[in-house]
Length: 172
Image (cartoon, rainbow, N blue to C red; front, top):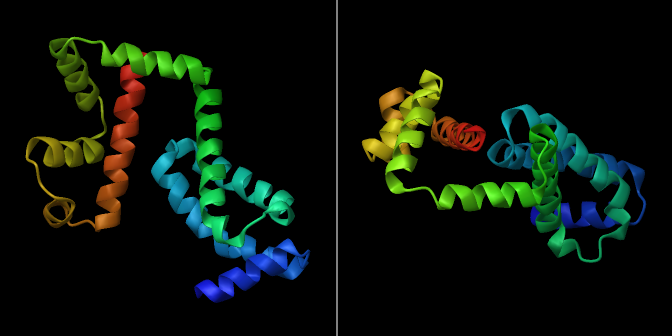
């Protein structure tokens, strides 16, 4: 869909056109899903997409500037991911900031040991991309070639591995 067609679709949906709103939800869904896949826990992707689409449905008429639509939509998806993460971990945003601060204060030796354990706890398909990227220092394209995967698959695995490592470190 061209930028002009998308802008016209957003304007029509803002104006109350039900068909345009339905089309806008369909057009926006893949973008939201890709964003959520990169920024949410795997278990939260569907919920984040659903929450974002629901908010789009309810608030599209209140958008002030069509040009900021994508930024607004991704900000909504990011907040949904964070809200779902807090709900899953039972932690508030302040508690998450405190965890980040605690991790930053670890001695390098302790952090190395914890990271090593976290990497060893990963399923093989995630561990191998982390080792190839961070130990062997291969590029995304090189990893894709070694593992016979697409670039997108490698990037998704790296992201998921990073999320799993972070969850491991937070639990510890």
